[in-house]
Image (cartoon, rainbow, N blue to C red):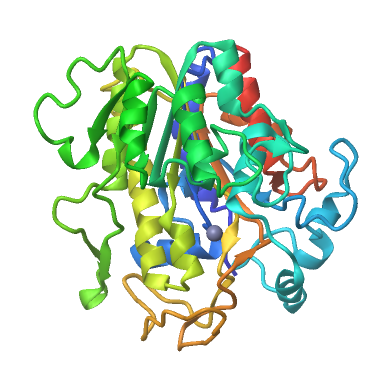
Amino acid sequence: MIKFINKTVFVISALIFLCAVCTEASGVKYIFVFIGDGMSAASESAASRFLYGQDNKLVWHSFPVRTFVTTWSLSSYKGEYKKDNFDADKGYDISAAGDKPYPYLFSPQAEKYFEKSEATDSAAAGSAISTGQKFFNGSVCLNNNNPVKNIIDIIKENGGFNTALVTTTLFYHATPASFSSHNKSRDNYRQIAEEILSKTKPELIFGSNDFFYLREFSQDNGYYLADSSDIGKPRVFDDTADKKIFINLNNYSVPAVRNEWNEPDFIYEENNIKFKDMILLSAGLLLDKKKKFFIMAEQSQIDSANHENNYVKMLASVFELNEGVKALVTLINSGKTDMNWNNTLVIVTADHATGFLRFDKILGRGQLPKKNIILGKNILKRNESISYKTTKHTNELVGCYAAGADSELFYKYIGKLYKNKNIINNTDIFNVLRETVSNK
Ligand SMILES: [Zn+2]
């Protein structure tokens, strides 16, 4: 039986994070929201086992706040939804689906529930996290043609914080879009991109871009434009402290995975950028602006790998996210910047689960399934140690982890939706963020 709360880890991490907090009054200056797109609890377990030989060893598993999140959207809600009076079981039926996700809990009844349940998409889930409201799939912060304020809108109104979107995919893709635009469809890429660059105008955008005209469009809207393949060159970011920055991500892919002698090993393409480089550069550029900031940072390929039922690519993608969060935690602990656990809030979560990954046997450190079967559309196969039951999203609970200043705000919401259960609604992440950015 896997224990979600390892007491030793809990005590040590509580000491590391909480002692720092109690020495000074809380005042959040720096906020990081990491989203592993499509990162099911099983994806986290698979990566943790591959890297460390056991569950719950990824860097966020030592954060003091560890809870599970319901991800359902209005498209998956079974009934007529009213914002202030809804039945949580019609979004996620805890009696059928369980109070923990697989692999912490397995029941044939829950498996049947997930097979039958509709699931959210990234637009509705991202919008719920960013606005505190539920949406139909495909909608980006828009309900009945009414734009709903997201956390970046609120920050812009209140002032005080710079904002940044960092993603390993298109900067106008569903997840970053749901923090920075309002549209009836996530597929309206041009409209979304133009809204981000000309209206929302976060101080930093770091993501890929398939529309060539947006390069000039970004400059016309006051952005300093750089390509990520040029960031190692001298003077690329000299004199940008007073400018908005758009870094066009043009050299990113997740590493290949090798497991010689059962040693996990990741091989990057030459001259490619890593997610951790993106995080450290983004934090550095915003710290240079000498102002409080909010960063939404997404690792997107976890979702696409799970859609492809590509276990190995999923491991590499979760590894990338883990490396990014680890690099940030190391930087905060180093004391080399203004960031510390009194003034920095770090949240790691997933927008939804993808792939319905199940383990037929437990793989140890550095072990991969005998065959890496990449499945075609709707062709569901098994191999000797893992199986994917779908190429789509599922309504399973996902993880949410928080450390640092104001992370204790999560305790207001844990166990509220489902009494005494270690579960929050994805809209509660917004509630925490709103309180954090508003009360200072
Ligand atoms: Zn997806």
